[in-house]
Image 1 (cartoon, each protein chain N blue to C red):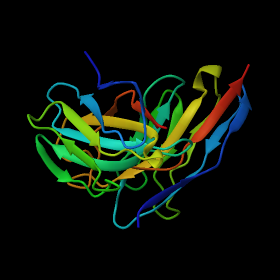
Image 2 (tube, chains in turn red, green):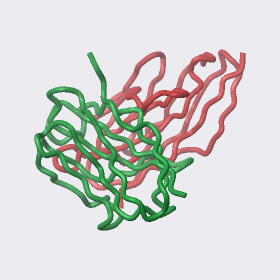
Image 3 (cartoon, rainbow over the protein chains, first blue to last red):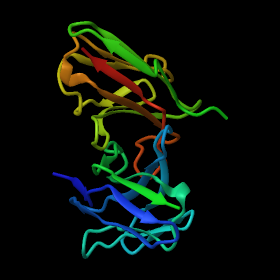
Length: 113
Length: 116
C-alpha cells in the first residue's frame, strides 16, 4: 500500500545550523507530496508541496524536491531559527476521490539559541 | 477570515459513552476530511465528504464510528460506545475544491478525546 517514512526524531540543532529531514514514500502512480508543520499549540499547516517529479516546493526558507527515482522528498533549510521548532510531517496524496493525505509519523525539531 | 474550528477542544469520556465531535469548515469549502492522530503518530484518514456526500469512509476503524455533513457545511463525527483505544486527537480539514489532493487542506486545532 501507499506509505510515507520519515526520519525518527527528535532532532536538536543549534540556531543557524543546516537542517535535513529525510522522507521517502511508497506509492503507485504519481502522487503529490507535501510537508506540513505543527507549531507548539497550533494546528497543522501546509509548509510546501510538489505535484510532479523534479518539482521543488519552497516556503519560509524551506525547500524539498520531488525525486521520483529515489522516491524521496527530503526537507532542507540552510539556517534554522528558534522559531522553526515544531513537528514536521511528510505526506502524499493522489487527489480526486482519493484526496486524503497519507502522513508519516512526524519529526520533532528543536532549535536551541 | 475564520479558519476551521472544532469543538469541543477536549473531551473526557467514560468507556462505553457516546461522543459527538463537531467541525466547522471554512465557508464555501467543498471538501471535508476527518483524521485520527494517536499520540506520537501522524494523522490517519478516517472519512471524506464532498459537500453533503460521504464519498469515502474506508478509514473508519469500526461501525462504532459515524460521520455526517447533512447540509454540506458543518460535520459531526460520532463515536458510539467509546473504548480506550479511541483516545486520540481528531482532526478536521477542509479544502476549497472537490477531492482534496493538490488543493491545500486547512486543518482545525483538533479535539483531544480521552476515554477512561
